[in-house]
Image (tube, rainbow over all chains, first blue to last red; front, top):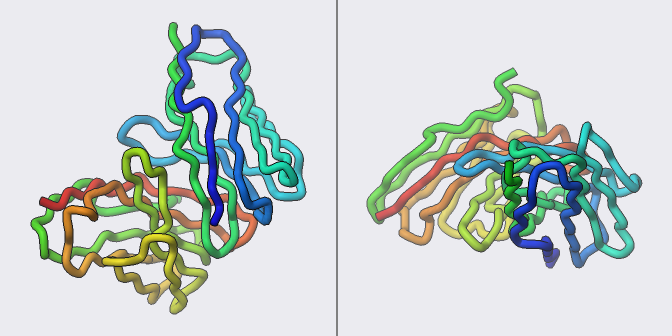
Length: 111
Length: 113
């Protein structure tokens, strides 16, 4: 059974810092890995999708990398802003049995 | 496109009552799924469907039924609600079961008393 661990569980930093959120997973037989953002009481917003054959994806200030063989992914956030405050979820999978989610990293960016 | 829509947004049930959580998507996606989110547990897959007429169980299917009569709709039925089913329920869809981005609905917050 796939198990996903996200480190750190919580992070509070001042505005402007560059951040790295870590995700590790136990089963490397995945089709892809998605990073999501969830605001309190809201649904999930997809940030980045990395296919299993890719090493990284970029969208604006966000960059996600994937090392499938070692079961690791990182989400890099450049020049953090208060609006980046949210919970970030890592989810490898993409097959018929869906995504397996980590418990998330709760991020607070202090103005 | 409205994307993935879910109704209702909130619901309170008494133990033993039944209800259906609605999910619809207008992106012509073949793959649809239901997750529940509980504090400290993350999101867990309940049921999924790879196309109209085809459904299968996920990690936590007990107490829930699904059917898929059209590509657009994938309702989740609770036949006899229990307090353990208090949770936030999310529906998701993607173009295919493998390799495509999944899109999530806004969720239904269900409380069973």
